[in-house]
Length: 127
View 1: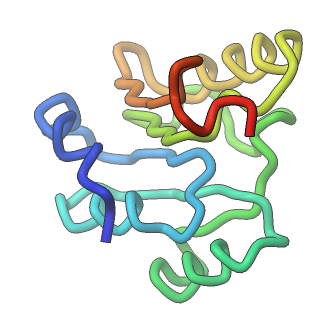
View 2: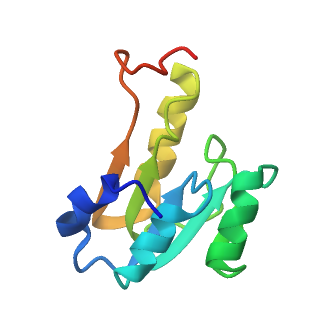
View 3: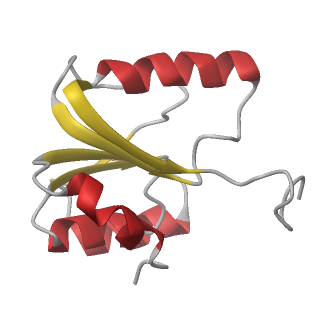
């Protein structure tokens, strides 16, 4: 089950149809989004045990293996929203800037972006 962070942003996602989740890990947030009636496409790297859990949770149609530090394998403006939880801060400044351009490319105009990142005062910062 999701840790609940996304629930605080549920109102922002009301009425959003198709959502891209970047870095889905075990798929808990994607599962919550789906329970809210959203059409979810979740992405992550294939070589983790967590992603194996996501495949069980989400099935093969909703999970795509993709490295979001590379160009995303989607056309422009095909999602109504993008969700990213703790998956956007592992990279160099240049890679992060490139990722932001890709993230901005895939939602439709006025699409929603919901994300969370760690702060420098987080106990895990630098771990």
